[in-house]
Length: 162
Image (cartoon, rainbow, N blue to C red; front, side, top):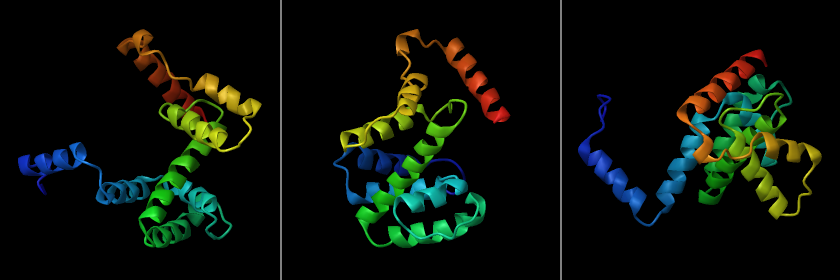
């Protein structure tokens, strides 16, 4: 697998894991991957969601310390690893919820995050309603490859302006 070409045996082993009964190794892998691939500027917000102490600095300056505390917390057990991964996703959703222009890929996460909060006693705000409208799931029957590409280009342009 080191030569950049997936091995047949590796793919078969991965398929067996993905089609079988999910085990803790899948949760552990997912949690580690989410932490490894998280944007560094998100890590302080994720640590804050978990109530972990991180020095008060800009997101970039605090990201190293946040990564350290998140990794230490994740090392305490499977439940903690899962919570770290969820905190990272929720921090990303908070960021996408607060941006001026809609995030191209973040919409479903923003809505799912809000849904979890509402299901657990949070009172939805007018801002949440605005996010529901701008991030609503597009009807797949009306989303052609052409207009999906137009939307992608529009949102990429919006991101560059932000």
